[in-house]
Length: 269
Image (cartoon, rainbow, N blue to C red; front, side):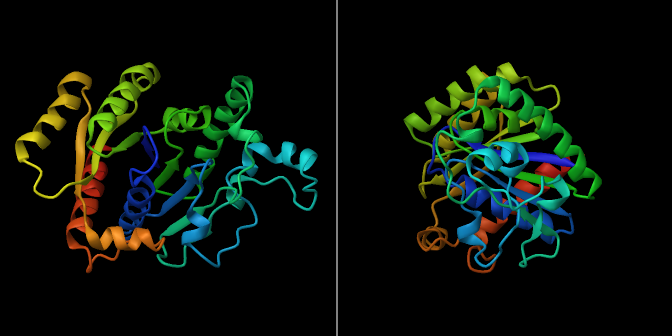
């Protein structure tokens, strides 16, 4: 099983849209795929997959004892990894794990110290192994933007990270900082890092796009895996909270997603 983490320097880059559609593309190609809403600051899966009511959420794996003590949540038994996935009902091969829909800031994974997260990392590694035993080919994690210890743990267990950015001055500068100061420290022996330029303005000069790609490849040795142009159809879907993009209506977007999936499939073999 390969773990692919979607991350970004800041919010509003379209990270969740790309993560979900990549997961769907893997599933449609016949791979058993598990998508995890690990954006604990702003979880979105529940608002997209309306009507699904999981008994357990991603937070429960790490916060169960805290929740039982502080929230009087005594009606549940301690969950095992196998208890979390539920089928998406849109693709047979796509299962989902939700995050807590109303995160409590200053609680659990959102606030605990490094000792807590050291234990959480150990639990995450064990959980990864359990998901692999369940037969998943790909695990897609949509993480919180910027940096927190929960996102760093996800990056540590990843086989690949896709760093999503909008190509403007602060997007490029912030992503450069992220890679230089954090990703380089976490090491790249077992992980491949990629850049996705999202919401690129149509008719942006090819020369400029090439400059962006060279910046990350030459300075940081990070390859560009996708360039997604601004698309009114995709934007309209996002406006109404529909982040699952239909292939026939948005062919250009779907082609980019399929190329990303093919590249990941090739590189992670």
